[in-house]
Image (cartoon, rainbow, N blue to C red):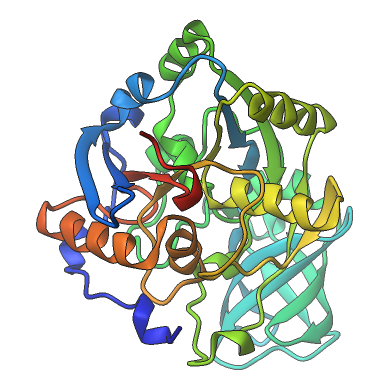
Length: 352
């Protein structure tokens, strides 16, 4: 495999800048590969999902909650800075990326501004306590989770060009979000509203959640032509033990495990490899990977040359994914975080 195999040209106007009026208004492209190798591409609406899943199937979502991880301020010398929290590491500490005209040295002080302009007394000082590129460790004067609502804003992805507003505060968050720690949304889950989840339950679909705190590294492209040289970013995950029991029961009944999002899939397949229901995952999935637990995947469209595009190519097949992306571009699907979705079937578990 070569890095060029995972590249494509996307018209910029297809990058969704805002969410649709309703979560389930998005489109859904179902990708089916027949036994003869032919790929069928079916254009649907996301709310059609209710007709595509069966009683007894197990739907697993990621319940991570996006924190207000982008903060603005200035150095003691006056230069402007922008902080993006990568991970909260303790009650008063966090790993961050810092955008500044000049990198701040260790032990320097940074002044952070509240979201709304106010008296200077409302600013806080933080200390740069360590630096291991590309991250800095920052010491906050109080509990980080308590400070962020006042000083941070939702960290919209770099391809969304507007500053977050009240709509983004609600919609760049899934309806199942409850465990704070992510700096990017598990975007496949954004298509579900309470009504659709309720209809799934009424149909007899099992629904459960796990947690994987999505890191900013999810937006980083792979730069090495030799994929084996790529170093995957680490993300924390936690799987409730009852999900493992549910998966075994679901497969025993001949039903499907449906992962909502690549983050959910990576957590489950990490467990399949190491047997740990919680910890850190650096799982980098490329074509040839042996999937053990997930049968069907709901996912958004992903960035060129990204690890997530490689993952979906491993799951559904490189040629079917390439065909699906070209079809989506021709049919003017909406791409990336606020964009439309795909329904993918694992090559070894294709529907009849």
